[in-house]
Length: 231
Image (cartoon, rainbow, N blue to C red; front, top):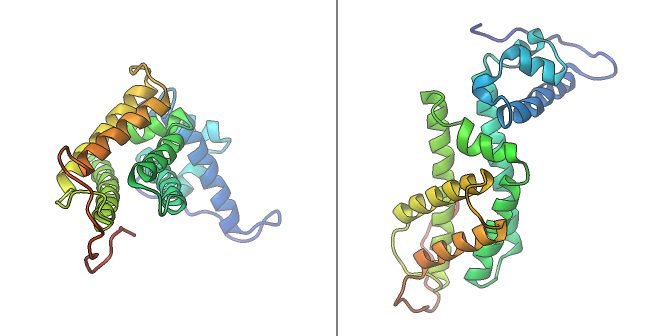
């Protein structure tokens, strides 16, 4: 099917069409998180199975989405948004702390969010990979957003004299790969460590990038003009 069916309009049961649509869409996404992020996974899920898990009809599915890939795309963005919200809140709460404490708080917030439900890890690191060029572009775009966040924090640390001044884009890309790989392996049971130990290892890696051997903390530097953190 190449397009969505038109959803009914008007008020019914005391709710508007928009409210009913939002409720249906939420039910489909909740069901998809369980099926895509668990058993049978995205590739093993059918429209009929997803509709049944959501307690809705296939007709209602096509009123909200064109394909299952569209559902996965929305779900992948939603899971990343949840993690980003947790990180942004941690940024605010850790304002003014020394770099090591600040980085630790931020990564504990990120790890706690993405590991709070095993389905979130599978959606983020497994199910999204290799589905289609469109989803691969989306995955890389969200990865780039996390890289920019790391670079923004590195720039801020340089301005405070807590990090060595240099271009951190390549290092941030490599570090994000480490984060994704280590959290995926930990969630799969391939890493014999607690989540706190995993976070501590990631923090050590990032601090090693920001404060390489032989570098000594400097006084605060004048900040560059322009925005420091992506919207």
